[in-house]
Length: 363
Image (cartoon, rainbow, N blue to C red; front, side, top):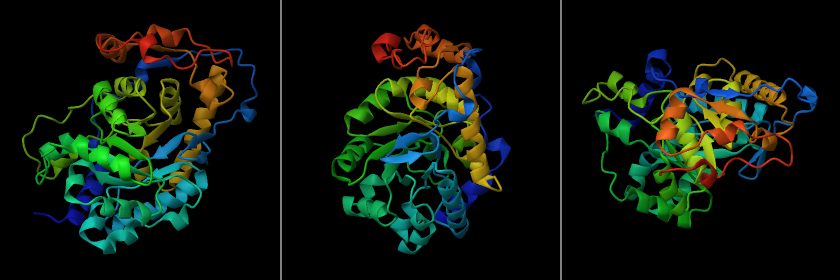
């Protein structure tokens, strides 16, 4: 069986390839932000800043966790940390499980000195929680000075991974225990196959503070595992698309949107659809300078806000939009009413993002 470090190296190498992406879209093309030909706002004065984990970001952007546990992964973490600090966006690290197997790998994750002012998020797999006492999980957070811990759900990846761990029994209970005792907030994220509303409800009721819906439409981790010799083919395109997952999860609590976010325009749509932040890994993974990608996304968000007449992120959350195509079909089938989005206004007196009762769900 390959070592964890070898597996992490394989993941980085394969995930960087275009053929590791889902063929089916995340749903952003189904969302039309209503153009405002009379925005009555100065583009240069638009405020794209956002608060997250008690810190101020230049824009609601998260570089999501993708690496660690190897020398290459450590070098990438340092590169991303510098870029995130320069562009003032949040940063997530890849799974810290290698640290629990070999404390020497701490060096691959210890990047706080390179990004002192931004939110830094640790990472551990939910299926691994029963293996370790809470003191070890707390050490993962304190040793890297993280502002939060992301617990990732990856049943699809584990199911097809050659050496996958498929015993997810008791995972919710383990997450609840960590939420109760850990010194920092807990974020639960998928790894690209999406989180539905009922699962989000269970997680929030267990003490989770944020959910990263991480839907289908970006990197397919089943495809990554198949490239490593994964078992039981047929799940290359399995998953719940990102935009329906975002709408469902945000009905129950603060949600980060990732999974196929490929531009600042996508990020702006995600914010208007209810996301607190928009996250991505793949666009930053292969970038020569990830800070330039973040800077471009910030300006795309700003321009999208201008074209919607929104002066700040809170107003952008009320930008009118139209949802069509497969995203609308899925959400209508799930009991959501998409018409409420088209009647919104960015004016300060406008109603906030539709509540679950306004949108309807799970009829």
